[in-house]
Length: 262
Image 1 (cartoon, rainbow, N blue to C red):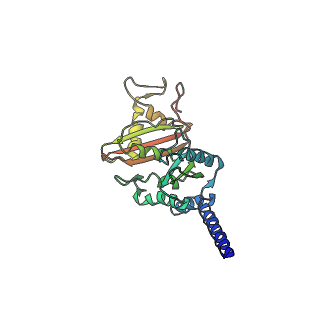
Image 2 (cartoon, rainbow, N blue to C red):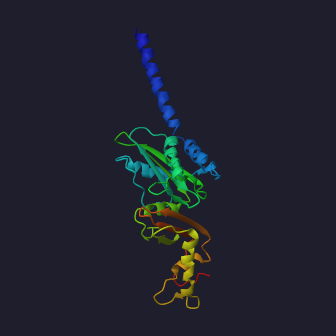
Image 3 (cartoon, rainbow, N blue to C red):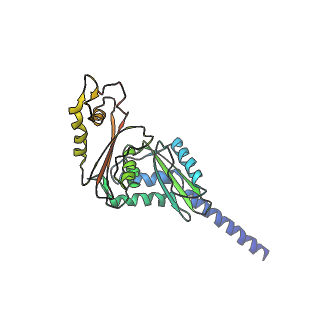
């Protein structure tokens, strides 16, 4: 009888150990990468690689969220960021699936989310220029799970456009590492028409004095044609009020005081 009890106890311990190993296996580096890569491959985008520096950033923020498990984004982050939480256990695969399921709400032709829907978690997953990934998972004090994934370079324009969907206001992003131009309309606004509005400011720019005409704006135009700005990222969102918000970011940024754009 003692032997049977000991055998049962040993079996339970082994089963628990196997369960723990299974849960840990779902949170491996490869599981995060595989889930992202599958979503990217579905739209013809190449896979990502794991970056320890990006992962360290994700780990630091996840540890900060262990006390409350709230979906609060990290401040002054240099990366794209997706967050997920659950009241119980949450695997890496299931977290990424939640983000990727937003694909149904994303319109690639207009580069926007369906009205009243979210797609800003899906777009960072498949962002073509984001090639480095780092993720972290933490068990929260309330028994829940918090998962964060950061991507580099970030889909900065998309993340910020989604933030403006609630009010459609022309408010610039804070602590941005890029040049930035914004546009909005009370109805639909195409990318072509937004850029045309900025470029039309050329009429107010005086190259000889490197200045705008009195009482006029030309800073949107000069950023568009800034010689050293060679990388571009733009995003469009349908606002809750029916309007349209468009933002474009430029890297390296332009419009330095005392310098000509070209």
